[in-house]
Image (cartoon, rainbow, N blue to C red; front, side, top):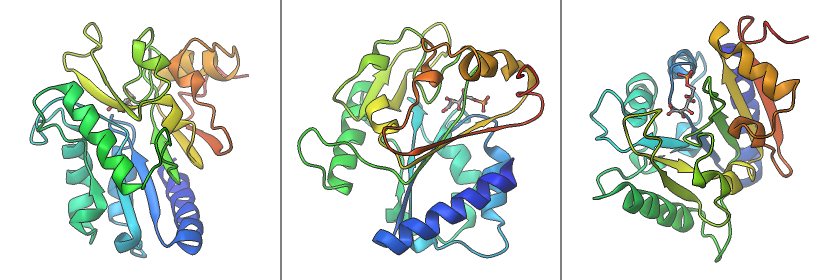
Length: 230
Ligand code: 6PG
């Protein structure tokens, strides 16, 4: 799964760099992509890191030093091992006083980086997402008001029952504006939700609402996660 994901990364990166001189990718936390990040860091032919910008899909409202921080995991496994300029890394600003302020600041950072006009959304070349057993993706949890966010780029969410931390997440208008979205899903505990999304078309689940407007959508599943599929 990781090897296939890397081959897509390389392909998408080459295309983006050919067209506009850089790759803009938003990547997720969670356990599943850990091996991928390690493999990208140790990839045999070094990737064009000076032309690669890494953003975060979501983050817990905790310090970047915390073991729960997505940035910490991504930094430990990938970023600190490659020659990526500091200004090409775009973490979610958790040093703000509240999760709402962090979401607002992240949104402002994205507006400024992508030079967005009022009401515009960034168009990432590539977004990596995971799926939770409950069907969440990014930090977009079932029944959260953030699922309906129509105009903001980033939102603060408080999934109290599911996660002990407040979180900040990219919203659906941003996710669905991407050129390529790749879900990485592994493990038998995901088999049920994968079936619901792909075969039963349960459109209530957040992950099922990932439908790129013009971009491509890939589901990379291991055998266990795919085991309930026909
Ligand atoms: C996070 C993620 C989240 C994750 C899923 C799947 O920061 O936790 O962005 O949406 O992708 O919960 O997580 P696993 O890969 O650990 O199953």
